Structures are given as C-alpha cells and as structure tokens.
Figure (cartoon, rainbow, N blue to C red):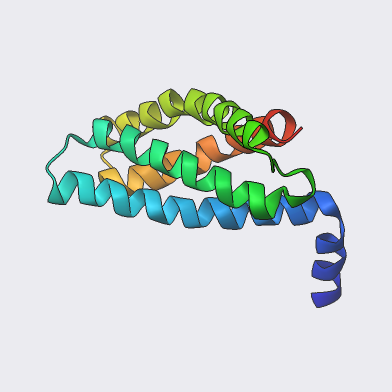
Length: 139
C-alpha cells in the first residue's frame, strides 16, 4: 500500500491533486467556521453569510495553492500574483452560484442543516473549481 501511494505521489499530477485536496479541506474547515460565526454569532442570513465566507476562502486558497499546490507554476511577481488572483476569483466566483444554489436546495428541500448542506455543496463544487483552476489559473 505504501509503495503504491509513493508511486502515485511521484506523479506530479497526483501530487498536485493531493495538495489541492489538502488546501481545499483546510479551506472547507475555515469556510464552515466562518459560516457558523456569521450565522450563529453575527445573525447574518445563511446564504449571504455563505457568499462572504466563500470569498474569504477564495483569497486564502489562492495564496496557499500558489505557494504549495502549483509551486512549479507559481505566480511570483506582483502583476502575476494579481492576475492569478483575478483569474481564480473568476473561476471560483463562478462557482459561488453553484455552491450557494446547492446549499439552498439541500436546506430548503433536502431538510439538511445549513452546515451539513454547505459541506456537501463544497464537495460538489470542488471538482468544478479544480478543473478550471488547474487549467486556467495556473495553466
């Protein structure tokens, strides 16, 4: 099992996907914490709170992915960093309606608690975000 994992991680595509997953999992945790704070502590409507939490994690993920996941293609100059941040915001920003739409559907029609629904929505929209980020933001 360990040798198979080592072979998989030796492939740059698998290593990059694994790192993207780790950064995404950490960001999902941050997003969930922010969402809970905005809704349960600050009293903000859960869909609005979701959009704000998503945007905060978009920026956070960009810098972590740039430094670690896509380090061989990282944006280093001010111009390329800002250009990459704009591109990732377009990619991930385009996923905001997908994620918040799923959140709404899971809560209103699926009967899920908003934090559980958010976790499911993150997983579904994560595939979309990875494909676009890998090919356009760091392509």
